[in-house]
Every structure is written in C-alpha cells, then in structure tokens.
Figure 1 (cartoon, rainbow, N blue to C red):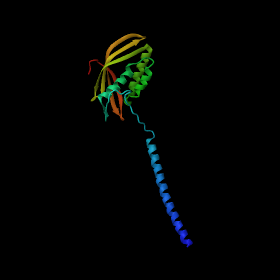
Figure 2 (spheres, rainbow, N blue to C red; figure 1 turned 180 degrees about the horizontal axis):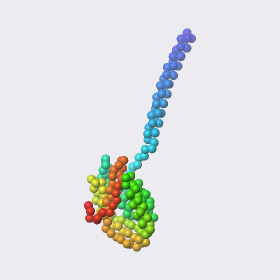
Figure 3 (cartoon, helix red, strand yellow; figure 1 turned 135 degrees about the vertical axis):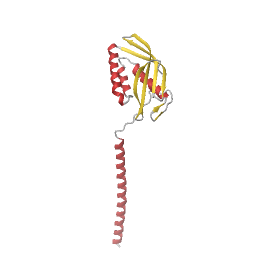
Figure 4 (tube, helix red, strand yellow; figure 1 turned 60 degrees about the vertical axis):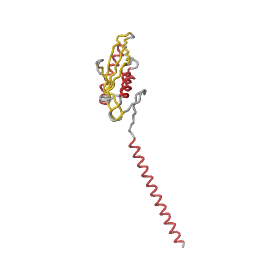
Length: 188
C-alpha cells in the first residue's frame, strides 16, 4: 500500500514538474520576445514637426501638404531667415537647419553661415514684413511677398519690396525645407 501511495505521489510530482516546466518555457519565450521588441525599438527616433503656432487646420498626406500648412511653415521659415540681428542669427540658423532636407543641408548651412558672418561684420539687422502668401500644393512651394527693411549700425539702408520662394519636400513622414531663394516680386 505504501508503494502505491509513493508511486502516485511520484506521478503527481512529475505532472506538476512538467506543468511548471511548460510555464517556465512560456515565460522565457515571452522574455525573449520582449527583449527582441525593445532591441528593435532601440535607436528609432520619432520626430514630430509642426509649425510653431497653429492658426489654421491643415492636412498632410503621402508626399504633399495643404496650402495652409505651407503658409504656416513658410511664414516661420521666412521669419527664421529674414528677421535677424547679429545676436539672433546664430540660433535662428541652427533652428532653421533642423527643418532642412538632408540633401540640401550643406548648401543651406554654408549660405546661412556666410550671411551670418556678413551681418555680424557690418552690424546689420533685417526685418521682413510679409504682405502676401501664395502657396502651391502641386509644387509644394510658397511665395512670400513683403517688405524687407535693412538697418546697418542703426541706420536704415533699405526698405524694399521683396519676394521669396520657399520649397518643401516630404520624406520620412516629415516636411523638409529644400530651397529658399529670392524671386522677382511679380512672380506667381
């Protein structure tokens, strides 16, 4: 009788050990899967870029953005490039470069550094007052027209009507600045 009881207890212990072994295996597999997910997420960066202030609703899909988005981002970019003083141009340049398309980064950085050096050398300040924004959803560009006021050593040296074309591209779920150039004032 003792033998039957001991034999039954042994079978019960083996069944429990088998159940515990399966549970340990499932938990170990879960740990390996969790580790794989964490390692997969390691190094990925999500950057959400929106205009600094939102005045209108807009949409972005695939490789295009609405004219409202182009107007808001273009106004911000124009402010970064055209409203500068010798003391603000460096941080505005660095902020602007965060929005630049990687393919255009070197050219725009060089241009902004040359402009920063020139403004500091002649102690110039520029202020741009936008008067008209013309967005093109098809071309993903914005033409901004307004008056550019230039002061050198506190004396006004220019107050001219200017127009600038700002071009954007869409890559990696984000809009990038690909060009900023002066255009004739009458260009559409």
